[in-house]
Image 1 (cartoon, each protein chain N blue to C red):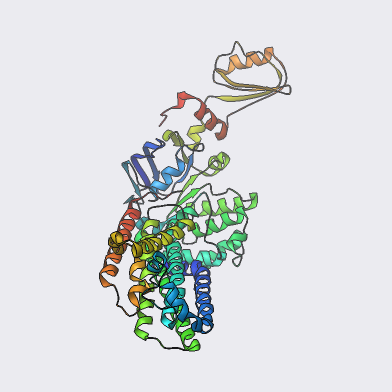
Image 2 (cartoon, each protein chain N blue to C red; image 1 turned 135 degrees about the vertical axis):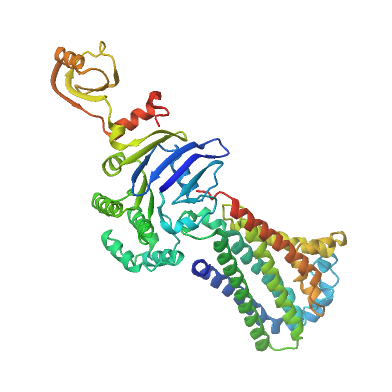
Length: 295
Length: 262
């Protein structure tokens, strides 16, 4: 069964923005990265799936249950981590967690305490005194403490220091190994590249790419970085040419012998030829219309 | 619903204590002034009964300030009515819209909680706050009567206090219904609603053509003019609550179908 399945899911706001004809399948047990720029529709998709807002068209299921405005049944098995961590004032971390546990009818105070220790957050602190990062930790605890089958995480590591980020991801990887599904919406592409198996890219409300992370990064394009100068005017397949402080860099999609010949003719002290990372692939997906509808 | 009720209680208890304490203190202080005013009131009664529109607006030709219950009704009843209505309006207007305005809706509805359950918990808590506020003020008022001494008819007093409670409940319910439509809290709007309803009643007292508005504004049936030596205004109470329940129902239905602002 798919953990998340959408068929032509559409949500159009009054200003015309939103998501259109989104077809997406996230298999159970997957670690899925969902990436896109600000305003692309990531949060719209998540909020439509979770029932905060109503769809305009299409269909979707979450853990086999149809989604709908105010739909709450399937939320028993979902742990949602919103992008912003805002809680009721005057409460301690422990009280927020208890409130969440009561709403879920779950006896998970031991699990919550263990997670609090892992994330190094004091249970007696008042939430309004917490920093952004610590509020994020509380949000993480609320999403994780009831051990859901599906994690929907929106910018999960924003505000966390590197140690906490590692602990968080180690925990999510362990959960994924147990068969839990993890759906991550993130700007931190290195995280998606490192931890996710599958990914989808959204732009202007449309899914423009959907593939295994490895496959998405599989490309004949190479990133060339060199110290020195060379003439690229005769080379076909060059893009994103940049000059800075005696360095040059560009992306090259073409045959390797031609590139090597051009490099040999240049005045080069050092050269590096690598595959582009996901951030660079992502940037090209956004800037290059050739990647429209690569689904 | 219980969990939401407890959270609402936790979030609102300070404001409840301040409003109840403030209104109770006002009642106490005013009633402590009665003995010193009582002797002078007889002359004032005659003066105030001949002040034209002002007399008619505040019913000073029908109720005597020199009597204990008359003094209470005129001096205290108005402030209790407006103050309590403001409290109820602010409670009601913020109860639901607060979640979107303060962006806690994202957290609240990430749980397996029906929107109707959340509304029920909030509504019940609002009603409990209003009832407790009125009980507190009623107790303080009655104690002040005992301290000050003087004769009064208990039925008049109870009629006044029950009508105040109904007034505050009606205002609270209407504002709660409105809160289901909007995503912003506004203390100013709450105060405005209470004052507008009060002014409507004042206008009705001087303009007979506006008498039909008595079915709209709860200040009519909570007006001491109609209650001291009178009776509960049942038709107006029923029509007022019918309006409140319609507004509430419309709000609840709307909230179940609206997109929650982010």
